[in-house]
Amino acid sequence: FLVSKGNHRHFMEKEIHEQPEVISHTLANYLDFSKGRIRPGSAPVDFAKIDRIAASACGTAYYAGLVGKYWFERIARLPVDIDVASEFRYREMPLSKDSLALFVSQSGETADTLASLRYCKQQGLTIGTIVNVRESTMARESHTVFPTLAGPEVGVASTKAFTCQLSVLASLAVAAGKMRGTINEDEERQLVRELSEIPRYANQALRLEPQIEAISRDLSQVKHVLYLGRGTSYPLALEGALKLKEISYIHAEGYAAGELKHGPIALIDESMPVIVIAPYDHWFEKTVSNMQEVAARGGKIILITDEKGAAASTLNTMHTIVLPDTPEIIAPIIYALPIQMLAYYTAVFMGTDVDQPRNLAKSVTVE
Ligand code: G6P
Image 1: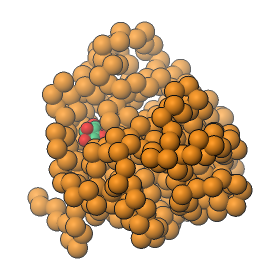
Image 2: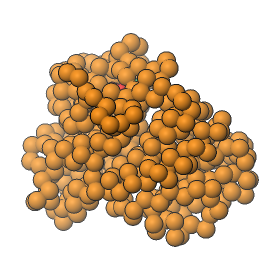
Image 3: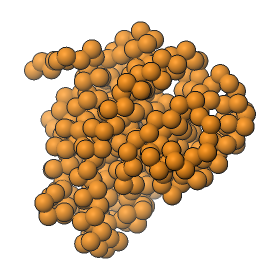
Image 4: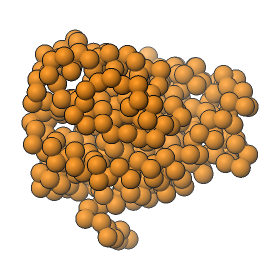
């Protein structure tokens, strides 16, 4: 069937704006908001019996999985190995039959992810897939499907599928924590309540659009951009860089903030903006101290933080994007929105074909 852009200039813009609604649909599949509980049967895997998760995916879905690793390990004390599917499938990694093989894919057709899924199935692992297209090959071949209810995503650069994948991963980490006894009922209720607030915070994040559009005008003038983040903001830094290069063709790199001194600091000068993703969480002080090193070398900092972070930061920034203070678990989902909008508006200023960037395909069905 035909999906229309409605009043939006591009599908990507439309899909960015749909996020509060589709995240809400997706969460409702896993969470019982009124009871503050994980919906019984929504995570039909016995996480108490699983020794580890072997995860793989490609592109943006891989970055979602990388955020998921932090959640599963912290909330459920469940170790996660994650790799890009093109490496995983040939790595001959020792796998245990007690592991859950977890795949993340919007289309459910990406060749490398599908090959990794088939490899794990052959090794006798339980196969779980977080997937947006219910009729896809991966959905059919999995033992358990964890649906994202993002609706059809047309823009080649993934946006709403990503935040829905994150919403599912967070819900599953809470479900796993409950089954493994690493969180109690009160903690479950608290986390479910925090997750239920994602759509409201996402709406607030969308209100930053005019400011982000103005910042993007500056970004469209530069040749290189560095994204930095720590903890769950690290995969967001990778995703921010990927989004920007995919659609604006500006060279961008994402780095773990702590790795700055091991290489990228050599690149810092007045001409390369450094976008720092730093909610006021338990990594904040560390990230800010890395930023002092950037500032000391004349680097131009664009800080994406929250109200507490903006108040605590002593940094001299070129721009500061201030999101509302959010519970820590949902920050990666909310911070995805400004980085998507930055990439989108920068590409619009560059005049590129936002929905159909050169050389890229929505779904890569060849190796
Ligand atoms: C392509 C798309 C990306 C997507 C990746 C994985 O590279 O351009 O947006 O993240 O494939 O696709 P999948 O359908 O498996 O999530």
